[in-house]
Length: 455
Ligand code: UD1
Ligand code: CA
Image 1: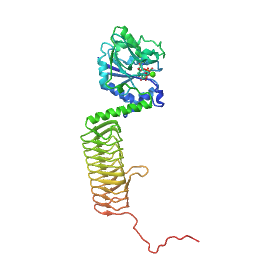
Image 2: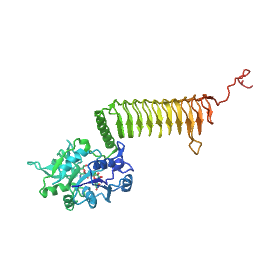
Image 3: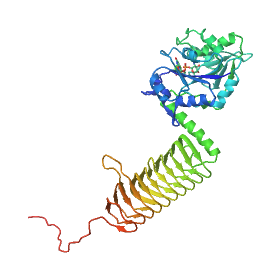
Image 4: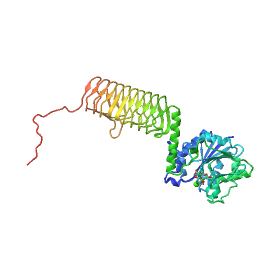
């Protein structure tokens, strides 16, 4: 049977104290709801129906390009049962249905597969255990057979029921046909005057079914986000789990507790990463790459044997093999370094190709440029690429030596093998192989006397 997934996401998330709908808060670089949707996709769901309420338009807009999603509005939050009912018009009559929560972001496909496998002829509920199950619904079982009888919500529970350690995660699986039948029979005669989805458990039992329970591989998979504190806790859980998996795959981490991936990190052999680095988007690290402490890499690709030194920031850049970048380097979008390039401290490179073996080791700005191979850019040198309106290009051919503190006014071409004297302001193309100096001549005044105080 095809699988349809219903994701409940109509809750307001008041405890987040945020203008942003709760399910759009980010965890590991992806929104909470985005994570749940991705997991539903991993399960091969034929349909994914999201129940939204408060801030619904903002939530829908965040998934504007995702044509595989169906949306159901729940205008008033009358309970989880009512929420699922809103989704039913989108659900295929002959499907298996899995109910997920948009604010339970770390649930894994493997645990859900076991839940779905337990459901085909009945109802399967995912449960977990806690010494104090606090505000959760409790799983009430028959004392002698230990079969599930019903779920009692915390607010409706008597002390004896509150002592039960098995709690309802809210995630469940059954067939669309059975679900539709039960939803038609639930009432809101309870402490919260809500239509409880959990009431379908007793209805299933009344229909003579044996309700099955399945536990997640890890309890953190079923933990929800209701506050910024819980969000930060689950972020760390996710980062630790991800770090553990990457280390199992051979990545060397100085400290897995100080490592953040907000996207996808792909790495070769013998890669090592020092503390406090952040990886965003898709980052590819070749063999034997080393990343120093406190670096941020966003959508970058780095070749074999390259060293990224501390406090460097790389964004949409490509770095070839055997390069040395940083400390304190900034590679901005479109920076493309060939092999053996050295970019040193306080050097900014933007939209610029740099050829093999070229160096800019100190305090430079190189933007909208093309550098050949074997170029040396002296300390303090900048390309003046912006005339206030347009960006202009600078071309520096192979084996050029630019002295310190040169100002290269684009558009300009520095021909192969030329030397630029320190402190020059270059606004015209230079000839091949010659020394070009463009600065005031040095003069000394022998009869000069320092000014004396008047009167
Ligand atoms: C529910 C369960 C409870 C379980 C707990 C686990 C019911 C009646 N109770 O509690 O047994 O232990 O989850 O977290 O189902 N939502 C809507 N519309 C609504 C109400 C809720 O979309 O009208 C969504 C929320 O956005 C959230 C999820 O459903 O994603 C659960 O709602 P929440 O209020 O957190 O759970 P409870 O109903 O308190
Ligand atoms: Ca609640």
